[in-house]
Image (tube, rainbow, N blue to C red):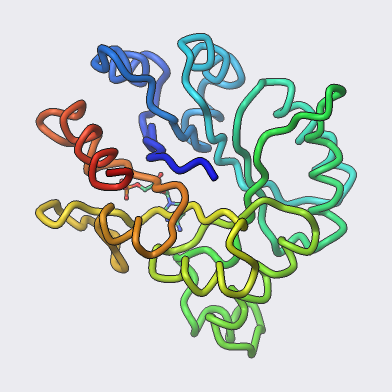
Length: 232
Ligand code: C5P
């Protein structure tokens, strides 16, 4: 299975994003484009970054009725991105419709990854606002299993959950993990963090790293360090 470091391009404009990518002389990092850049600059931003030869994780977390998600996913698939995601809370019918929409006429498709519960949701919110009495860990595991049964490729999860997700959903079920920090880097607002070396041992497949690379004095050196620590 492919393993890689995905660089989170959390910049507000395409020009800042491209200026950042210009700093990489040799390698073409796998990158993540989120809502901020996509809603500001649209599909043109995806095309511009794709034209430079990057693999792209388009992190838009779709969640709507099955038919709408299917048609939206077909549009994203035509952008030739490599990975997209949705909320598993949309349930199995929506996830299966998403897969159908993503599949191109030649049978290829981007990887489809589920978000289980957002890490910003705590146990209290789960119970009091979402009215889910099942504890968080069990909810996350059950949503991941629904995603696996619906044919999805994996989930976004904490590196601390990766081993449990693999145990519940199978070793080939992909884990995409933010919350990665070098031992000597600032945690920022991330609370449950892991180093790239430990994440490799924990069974993470794709590390999502933003600030430890984008805010580093030398981003290229930080990216190379992450790749070296993770892939050896
Ligand atoms: O800068 P940092 O390494 O914390 O960036 C992590 C990236 O992963 C950000 O784009 C953030 O929005 C995203 N993310 C996250 N935690 C989640 C899901 C996504 O940090 N649970």
